[in-house]
Image 1 (cartoon, helix red, strand yellow):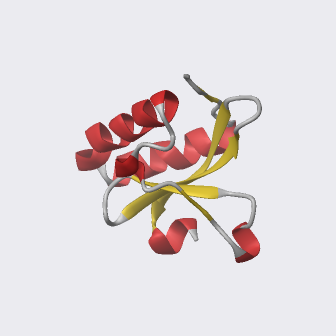
Image 2: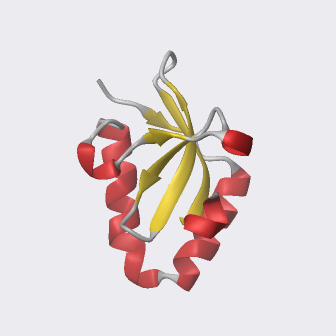
Length: 91
């Protein structure tokens, strides 16, 4: 089963800023997005639900330091990235 990534204008701006600051992570970032489309439950993504003020969102890992928070609509097989950055930025 394949999922659809739906990018908002706000997320695209955040992602562009992130990649401008961290060009060395571009390959890992793109690989993370590809895995999300193929299988958001892939073990290397470390998908987990968030709580507190981010309840209803999920997080996946780009690497040990950087994350992507996202809205995961399982019913519609749609994934909407919300934010990208290090732990302090996305949480």
